Image (cartoon, rainbow, N blue to C red; front, side, top):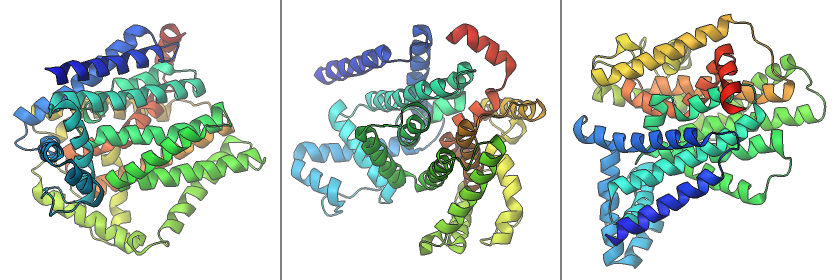
Amino acid sequence: MLYYVLNITVLCSLIYVSFNRRPDDLNPWFFWVFLILKLLAGFGLGIVYSYYYSSGDTYAFFYQAERLAHLARSNFSGYVQFLIFSDPTIISITSQWTPNLLFTKLISIFCIITNNNYWLISAYLSLFCFFSLLYLFKILTLIFTNNKLSIAIALFVVPSFVFWSSGLSKEAVTMACIVLIIVPYLRLFFINPKVSWVQWIVSLLALVLLWKLKYFYAAPLLVALLTASLVYLLYKIGLINTFTKTVGFSILIFLGILLCATLTHPNFYLSRVFEVIVENHDTLLAKSGDEIIHYYHLKPSLVSVLVNSPYALISGLFRPLPWDVEVLMGLGTGLENLLLLGFFVWTLVKPKVPFAARKAIIVTVTILYILILAVLLALSTPNFGTLMRFKVAFLPFLWIMVLYNNLFLRQLSQRLFN
């Protein structure tokens, strides 16, 4: 009982501090609604994997972490040694793949804190992600002031993003890491040229953790941030002063960094990257049912990947659609993607006012990050269920892009946030 009282007290204290530090123009009712949605999504993840799926990562991680927590209580020095060295002679853990093993170790700490309570751990991780998104909302709405509602919808309301980035999941942690990595750059570019060293250290630690957990999120993000930094430097010295130049230089530098990255290490060579993509594709395809993406003779070659990339891009951005799914649970996701596709088409056909050069840097680099990640994820992850979970790394940014210029949302945003 004492564990429950202590943990609920800590959780309530964290919520209280976050509430008092929320953005000034965020209505308290919005804060509580967004928070409750996030917590319920985390609990819902556990319930879905309990009753809908026969197996799932969330409980596999929890049960293995529970064993580590038991080790900590009986042999704390052995537990610490395992955390540092992963010595299998101390305890045998099923998750030997490095990202899964690292996440299991992380969850074991929460198991110790909560006395092996899955639901309390879910609440902690959901709050961790929620607080980071709230921080991102605060920064983004200081930069892009015309449609704060679109940013709020993308970060706190879109069902699939809220669901898959909550609870006891790697996505909840990795999404928080992505936010902690990019926020110092946003502050540097737009708010305060003097970002504290503490924020940079937190950003660096988040990058290390993200790389360890999901390097295929971290690599495109690193390319995007390096591109933004170089283009911003060109902007500061006066070589870039128009929207068109910003877009052009951003694309060229982004592609140039990608090309250079493939020459730095044998694992990054194009041939090796294609092999990994196809190996992951084939492995997941063998475990999947009918709800999959069918590619045209996907092979580990440049030509094959280029041929299939346009279809992968469309699939990564907008699928599954309602006619791609065969079960009721997938219908909601299909309808959400159909709505996203509709807003995307509307955005394309409506006239747009170009951003100022400095804002265009972030917009262009974000679009490039979305495009490259959508293609890579869709090619290597043909299963729609897994793809929707992996898409959380770019999904909120995609929704912001398609909603920001919506006139109705802009007018409504003026009433709700000003």
